[in-house]
Length: 256
Image 1 (cartoon, rainbow, N blue to C red):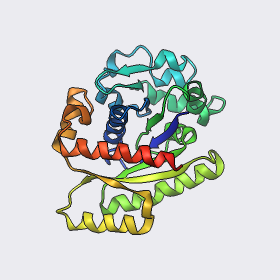
Image 2: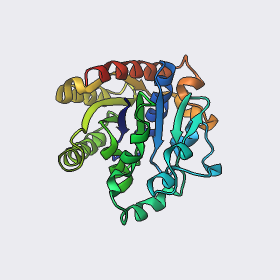
Image 3: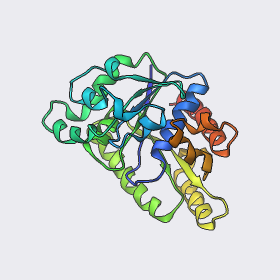
Image 4: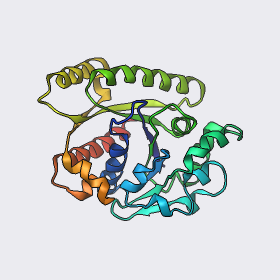
């Protein structure tokens, strides 16, 4: 039975897609069966998984609006060794079309029911906004993984996201909870980042993952090659951090 997790943050540029792609690859490396759902019209998680979004015949857009079923949309990421529901610019149109459809916030949840026994983990890469697409991700998920930089503005955005998750939990998805906060692009030489990190640990306690992803050039280079960072350079600090995070996720899921 798959555990479904959204990787979400309403702030842009905080490493959601990098986290989603590398966590998927690291979990697959650890022997888990993984499906990555790209809900961002930019399609960066699709490209980062080695799938060309420009040549797709079907995408997650077709799944959400009822033009295709999940097996017809699913594509294998060869470098990452996990499956992908890919996205491209077509998905931007889904925002408008979903408004008029039945069960509009549950379209992804309904589609995933067909494959819950095929995977151990389903990871959903959400766009950096509270849109109908993000809402579909949150309604389908058992929990939310929040990647964040240890900076002042990130703290402000975090409070908004926590409130959003509470509202979705109360009104649409009683299973939804915060699984944990992942500190990304971390530079221990910056005093402010150390202070914000300590604040997070003080306020959220064991909800803050022990794994910390450092700022790492090899992780930034990997998407241009269409390869997850943990495969691109296994020896890099970033890859090792995501492998540690994957192992932590496997252990954390056992206690949910």
